[in-house]
Image 1: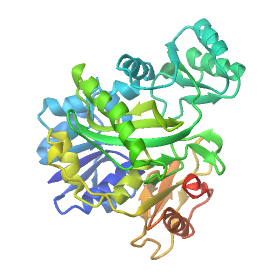
Image 2: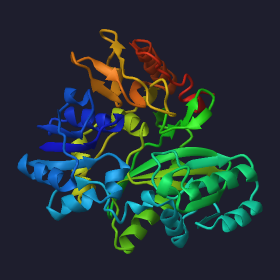
Image 3: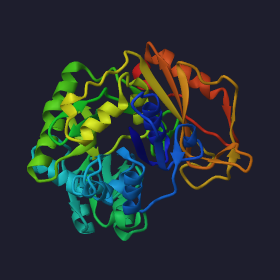
Length: 420
C-alpha cells in the first residue's frame, strides 16, 4: 500500500525506514520530510490538513502516520477520519493528554492512576502556597506544548516560584504557560513506555530510557532528547506488568469511557520509586529519539502494526521485536538548543553504515549541489545495534567517528544507566 508520514525529524525518518523495508509498502510520501527523506520516499510541500487529506485520496494512500504532537493537537486525525482515511494517531480530544498538562493530571487523578502530588493553576499566589508545602527539588510545568522544553526541575522554592512566574507572565513559553502544573519531585529512575492502541486493544512495546540533558553527565539544559536505548534492563517483567495494569490499561479504558477512544501510540513517562511506577506525563506520539531505537528493533511488518491499529483491528497484528539492543545518539548543531546555527556541510565516510549501525536524519537540507547540510537543532541520530548494550553503544559511537560537520555536538555517555 501507499503510505504518508507527517513530519520531518529523525522519528519520522525512522518510521519511514521501517516502512520502506516492508514488502507491503509500495510508495512512501513525507509531508514535509527533510533533506534526506527522499532517500526513502517523496517529499510533498503541503501543510493544510484538508489539502493533505485530499492528496491522500488522490494518491491512493491507505495509511497516514502522524509523527509530531502539534498536528495531533490541532486535529489532523479528525480531518482525515472525516474523509474515511486510515490514520495512525489520536483525535484532537484524546491528544489533550499531551497538549494540556493540566488536563492530563486531572484525567489521571480522576481515574486513580498513580502520579505525583500536584496542583494546576493560573494563580501565582496559589503556586506560592503549594510550593511552600513541598521540599525541593520541585517540578514546574507549562500547561501547553513547548517542544519538550516546558518542564523545569527547580532546586529551590525561590527558583520554582521564578519559573512559574515566568511561565504565567508569558515570558518563558508564551500562551503555553497560561496555566502551570506544580508537582512534588519523585526520586527514582525514569522509563519511557509506549503502548500502541486501537481504542480498545493495546500492545506495550519494549521500554526505553532517554537522555534529556544536553551535556555528558546529565548536565546542561533540557532538550528534545540527546539519545536513547532499548530495551531498558531496569524494566523487569514484574515492573512492566505493573505499568501495564496500573497505568496503560486504565488510561485506555478511561479515554474510551469518556468518549475519546485513544488510537495511535501513547507514551507514558514513568518514574519508578521503590519498585512502584508513577505516571509523570503522557505524550500522544512516539518520543524522539526513543522511536528510532524501537523502529531499529522492530522485526516484523511495520505496516501491519500501524495499519491494524489505525482501523481498529490491532488484535490481528503480531509484532515481533529483535533480541538485539539498540542505542541511538543524537548529534546536534553548534548552538543547540539556544539558537539556530549556520548551515554546515555534512561529511560521512564511505561505508560508514553497516548491518549494525545506521543514520537517521532530522535537521538536514540539501545544498545547491545536492550535498547534505546540517541546518536544524538535532541534525541526525547515529543508531547502533548489538547483542548487548555495550556493543550497541560502541557501534553507535564508531559510526559517529565517521561523521563530521562544523560545530557538531553530542553526549559521550548515552546508555550509562545500563552499563554502570
